[in-house]
Amino acid sequence: MLAEYFHQYIYKPHSGAFGPYFRTLYQTFKLIDGADIPEEDKVSYGKIARGLLSEDAVFLLAANAYGPYGREFIKYIEKFGLLEHMNPQHGDVVNLALALGFSPAATQGGDEEFPWWEEFVRPSREDVDAAAEPRELQPGELF
Image 1 (cartoon, rainbow, N blue to C red):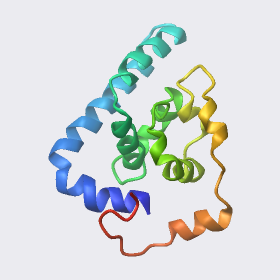
Image 2: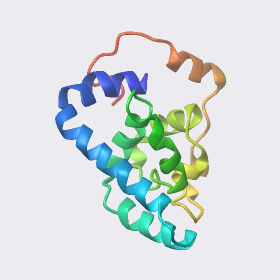
Image 3: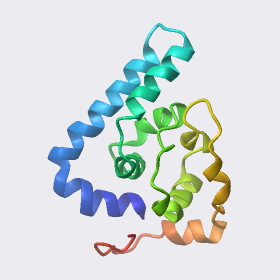
């Protein structure tokens, strides 16, 4: 549902802006991960790049990862903890998104514990299944 909404109402109408942004982010983290440097340096460079993301951009990044063009980004979202600075106002959506595909590492900044993860209650299997059922989405429905 989140991926459908994002793709239909946010990404598609603005693909000229989002496409280059997400591709540049992906290539940045791919370059850092593939660099022949110590792992601790990769974490440091990843933190610098992650620090450039706004709270709302982090939410859009998470939503994009579930769309047709973002699946490959999940490994870098988790490795570099790119959801660490997700805006807490998106708590319920974040919790559902994490239950559907991201590991807790995606919220932990790459090398430290992230305490707000414990504040959110994992949705039940029934809630996840209900959210995954296809249906027509309306603008503003998730927010």
